[in-house]
Image (cartoon, rainbow, N blue to C red):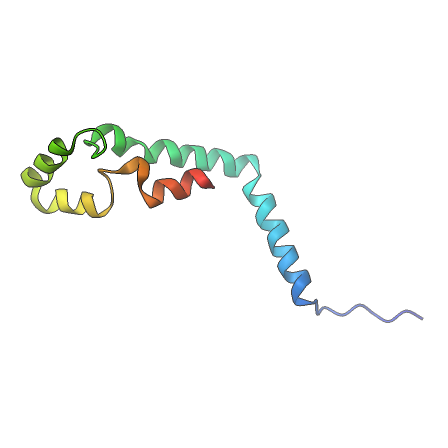
Length: 93
């Protein structure tokens, strides 16, 4: 008579199952559409705000004219959108 299967799995099986489910989620069409939408929304500040790579003078004057808002935008890397860590993370996914 075969022994009943136990609910306990090896750690390797758990990691493999996690990686398989993560890959399925990342390669799903729904995820692709969400990431494409996020990429489009994330590019909006790059189109509306001056970018440091194109014109450093405009960025400097924007920060000087807008005070704390300009400094906050700079901390969020909104003047370097296309080379920022958060934009890179979206398009790498």
